[in-house]
Every structure is written in structure tokens, then in C-alpha cells.
Image (cartoon, rainbow, N blue to C red; front, side):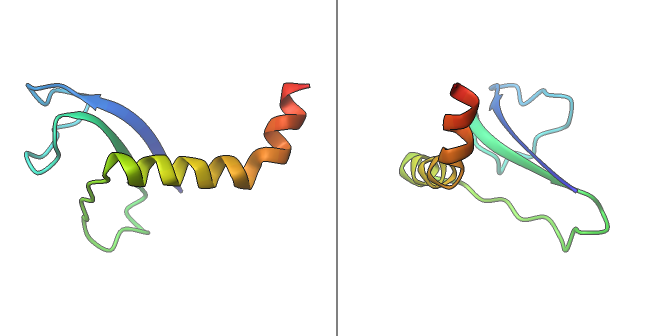
Length: 71
């Protein structure tokens, strides 16, 4: 199981978890996976352009369902 959540990392890095210093402060996307799926910890920083591109891809992929929900 994977859980993805966009969160704001404060300057003091205090969340429900201890945030490593490698993670920049500000808005980030955290992805949690079960230990069985984990092959090690990988930190990825997305540029604003990459995040927008990924969002656009998700919206395009699920556009029909989103439009149906909007009715």
C-alpha cells in the first residue's frame, strides 16, 4: 500500500514524523510505502514545473471520472 500526501514542511521540521534535513522546507509531496514494498529510502525533489506536469497528467488521465463527479 502506498499513501501520497502533499504537506508543508515548516522551518523547524516538526511534523508527525521527524523530517530529514535533506528534505527542503516548504510544500513537498511525501509518499509512504509499507516496509514490505520498501527497497530503501529515496528522496526526490520535484521542480514546480515537474509537479505541475504530473498534476496535469493525473487530471488528463482521470478527466472523464472528474467530469462525471462534477455533474
